[in-house]
Amino acid sequence: MKRLLLALAIATASFVAFTSCTKEYITQEHYDMVPAQTMIYSKTATDYPWNWGGTDNRAYFTLPIPELTAYYMDQGIVSVAISEDNESTYRTIPATVNGISYSYDYKVGSVIIYAEDPIMEPGSEISVPNDLVVKVSLIDADYVE
Image (cartoon, one colour):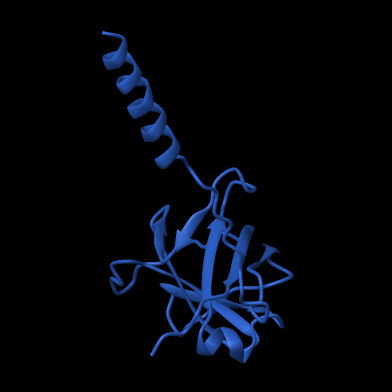
């Protein structure tokens, strides 16, 4: 019986010793990568007025964003979200909020935000909010061909 217990003790000790955990630290090797950036803009009627796109059911405004460089055009990610309730909640666009369809385009140095009637019915008008909070995030990414 003592030999059986001794064999069991040796087997348990061997199992514990050979299955121990090791820590592994992963470090970021890409020192040339730009960290993510987020800019928040308060859109008011005077700061960034809506421009009407030839009809009463499409409007747009342009945000100048000098941080939006050719780097983000080539391989980064540009994300835009809006808040109509003073930053209590954000909606990532494209989205339809309160009957208005929001979308955006971007180019080096600026983001253009569009608001339009999602149905685009002739003769319909949309009532765009003058006050919005716009969050623009520029995110680094590795480009893979």
